[in-house]
Amino acid sequence: MTSLEGRTVVIVSGPGGVGKGTIVEQLLARDPRLWLSQSWTTRPRRPAEPADAYRFVDRATFEAAIDADGFLEWIEFLDYLQGTPLPDPPDGMDVLLEIDVGGGRQVREAVPDAVLVFVDAPSAEHQRRRLESRGDDAATVARRMEKTASERAEAVAMGYVMVVNDEVGRAVEAVEALVAADRGRRREGPVGGSGR
Image (cartoon, rainbow, N blue to C red; front, top):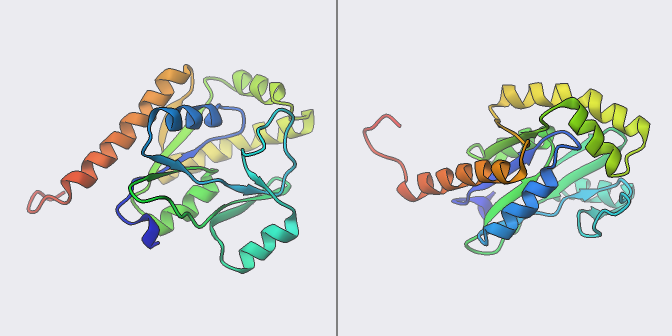
């Protein structure tokens, strides 16, 4: 994974409807050294979802890219495929990935020191309202709500840092602090004889 060597790699995960996209958007606006890798998905675009939120492709195109080893990670989620193509960030840029916990596990195998952030809603009711407001139908909302507990448990087991999105500005600052700490660690490098 030479294109990622020496870079801070931040993985932002969390269940549907917790505001991951808003946090990622603000991180990118505030930090010119962060580069977002655009994920691919085979699901249809949601109402009011930006055209560049994902690369929307059909299943055959996605499966051809899998066969060509074109993904850093990919997963079948509910009834669609989603994945991160092999990143090619510009020089000097750190990498931000907005992916689910299963994808985070795959990326961590390739990038063991990635910064793992799990964004959670302040309550189940808050999450449900967000899912409904973005246009998910009742069946999709129910499936996503069911999946939340298992995603959260997997994130805790992997050592994700938990960030509750009860106020967007505070959540963004929490992630920024993790990015700054990782960049500081990389600047300082390994400290000989300190046991760390």
